[in-house]
Image (cartoon, rainbow, N blue to C red; front, top):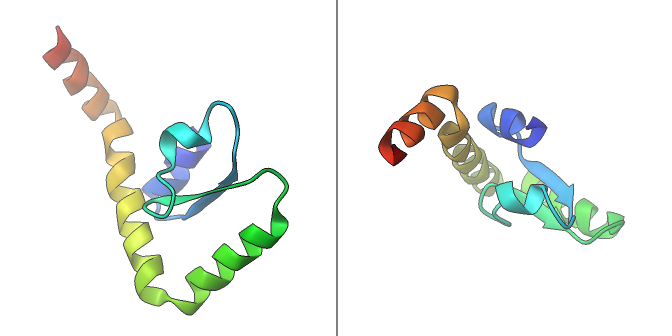
Length: 84
């Protein structure tokens, strides 16, 4: 849930690959990044890439905010209503 909350504020989430969790929320290169476990070099490359490309940073921020909206309480209620 921390990743969704961060995304809702436009924070770009960079997470290590796990069997469950972040991979279900992060679309690599769209609303954040998933990196190989313990690959600090890959994290550094991504951070440098984001700082050197403001347009990419803005795109990912916008995508993260938009993606997080489907996890808002009202969105969840609406999904249940449609299902029932």
